[in-house]
Amino acid sequence: MISVIVPVYNAEKYLDECVRSILGQSYRDVELILVDDGSTDASPSLCDAYQEMDGRVRALHQENGGVSAARNAGLRAARGEWIGFCDCDDYILPGMYEDMLAAGAGADVIVCTVLDEQADGGVRKVETGQVRCMSGQDALYELMTHMGSRAGHRETIWFSVWNKLYRRPLLEGVRFAPETDSAEDVPVNLAVFAKLGAEAGICYIEKPYYFWRWRGGSQSNLHAPGALLAGARTSALLLGSAAKLPGARQPAGAEAAFRHVYWYYSACGEELARRSGGAGGAYLALREEMRGLLAGMRRQEVARRLPPRWRAAAFLMQKLPGLFSVLWRAYRRVRGRR
Image (cartoon, rainbow, N blue to C red):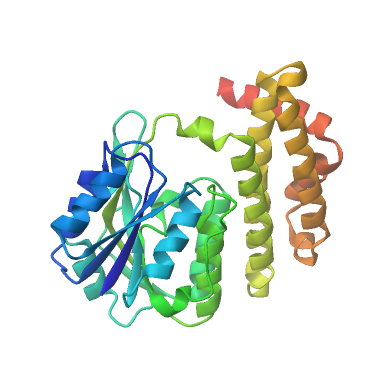
């Protein structure tokens, strides 16, 4: 059985499409766990209605605690051999679970690609039909180097949990950090892949079965101080994972971690540039926290294996934020003229 966990918050507009895409799968042995996270619209009653309609649905209700808390509640309730996730405003394509289980027979984690909706309504996807097996170590390296660059991660195994099926034992002792709802998937996948180590337990299918919906306004949410800090803290976890990679892979892993923190640090700089006076106070405080984080990252032994330009960038971000901002804005202007 697959336990599919769906955190639900004010999702009345999209929830029916999401639920029906899961219950309509050709693989019928599914337990759908809808976790209403204190919704204020019609979502709670919809969850209860689905439970009445189909015996495979379980509706849980809790006070608002965020997507991480909702997923953790679903994990505690799950009874399936496999665990899957879906966001309440996304949906999955027909045949997803049957095809993934067939292709990944013997695997511990099965990964598919994603239909990635864009702001203009277009959709990006990778669909070669190729199936690859990889170790946890290889998946960790691929996840880090693609995600850390902030480019190309949508053409690989992704950092998210919702395009994956996990054997339940792998998630024992692994939980989403309840204090954050930004980049919350990353520590979970880092922990799972680390458990697998050099074992070839991951099956990656280059066929899209998950539809990731474009959310208007998501960029402003990503740039909220709490979201930026949570994302930056994930960079320290990435660096710790880089230190566990084989020696030849450590420089690229370390670079990925510093690329990652660079993105969040730069986003903080963008918000500061838009504000003046006291309006930027929260982002000034955030930048100070990021500088402290960078100081700790730069002290790690693996950071010594960074390419020179990233060692320089890390030094400027931590020690000379004003100079870094000037250079960063000049770089952006030059890029904008190309």
